[in-house]
Length: 275
Ligand code: AMP
Ligand code: ZN
Image (cartoon, rainbow, N blue to C red; front, side):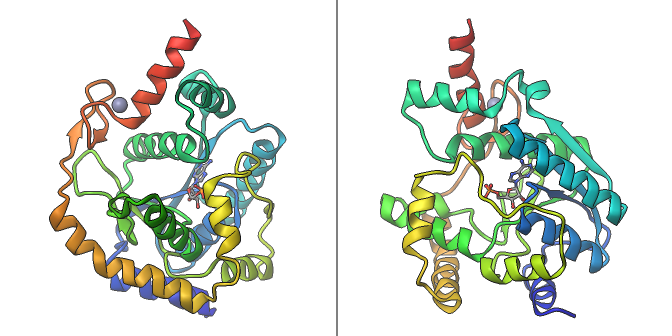
């Protein structure tokens, strides 16, 4: 078995991420990370399905969607594609442009909030026990450093291999690649000849995350691991100081730490513009 597959197996066992009876919905972006997660979890004998959000980012989304349809077909895995325009009545570019103008919100935040909201809703609809994402060691390391530089390490309080505060409205999100460096996943995915694109999201240009990624370039895998592992050690202490209370969003009913969830705050901004 490949080293990376062994590492995934260990992470699953150590953090009790998934059970053999669980229905696992793998959130597929079409990139190397989530594609590898789907492939490895199926190989390890887990009950997997694919869930992809078509964000309508032009040709880029079309190619990713086609690739995932082909890939899931070859693996004989069910794939559900949620069309953002059908789901929300608009594509991600429009939403992002409104939020930029009205709230000066840029970067990947808006997209991230909407993706999480849709994935949770649809995972419940699909009766999933877990949502698996392709977040890797580099993503996690970036998040720790970005939160630190923003002066708010509490933002990372839920960043663990199994995220989310236990709540009946949440489908727990798990990250089997949490401790695996991005370059190892890229090499694995290329070796396996997965039918995918390796370019970055066209929206992620000049964002804080991209800048952080650039100055992290000379970090070794060991250093990234140390940063992420040391932050994991801090989390129990941070959680004691900062209790998150989960309630139902007053508008959509989805779980939220405030009475109106972040997704609904975004939608209300966009609705005002459409009127
Ligand atoms: P990103 O936020 O783009 O770095 O993606 C992190 C993880 O979120 C990916 O590895 C996927 O598991 C999931 N994800 C990202 N984009 C999508 C999408 N369009 N549809 C479904 N899942 C996604
Ligand atoms: Zn809401």
